[in-house]
Image 1 (cartoon, helix red, strand yellow):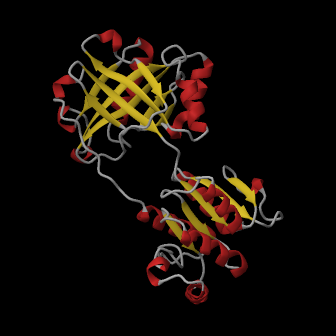
Image 2 (cartoon, helix red, strand yellow):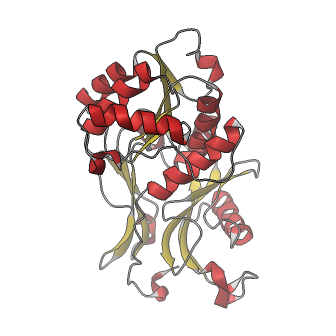
Image 3 (cartoon, rainbow, N blue to C red):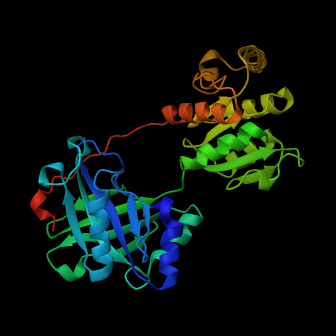
Length: 333
């Protein structure tokens, strides 16, 4: 939902009604994760997706009908039930509901928490013995797994929105600008840090936070504030040793990060390793550093190098397979 929160807010503030479809359960291989959402705005525009092409037309029609009729229902989409889709699309359960200020009065508070990177969880009744309870929402700040919970008399979809993963790029230059764009496409919250005010200009890095500070000092302060964790990715885009070595010294002393990368040629990396080894780091610790950063795709331009680093960053992320609920198909409306 985070990718369409601005579109949802626009509909919410307009006082009009759209249709919202949320992916609540999957069976087999599916292209998008549970919790993905599609909004049909009051003018028929589409924002987001729940199946990345497999059932888009059918989900669109169902969400549009929900907007017009006010009906809330849990629907199953399966390639064996007459939809003109590939057998590889898998089976998905989607909850459709009308979306407006009246149907989801708590949404503005949810969006506000998300904008401040605070955890917020929405419980939605997607099936119940009493139809009038279907579509009820409860909001809490407690973290839960995002999943469909099957109870004796109801199904409740639990969706937790946590802070997006963070990428801090040290060094303000053309590569940093390119990687910032790529990372934001991937859902990262990006910070650019450089001690040079001339280069650390916010207008050059749209959508990113820009900080003027010495890299090692900023990272130390962030770590002390609890703002660095195992999901944080760090890339140093400056090959100047007076910036880079103090920064990497701090980074390598932290608990393992989601990703730690440094640009530079193999020879520059050898000099980097020599400096870090002289600082007392052993081979096991230095192995955490991806350098030269990026997957070898023959990249030459800043954007090409950014793509190679973004690919390596994704490859370094842990992937956890989801589990499907065991409620039988007949429970769906």
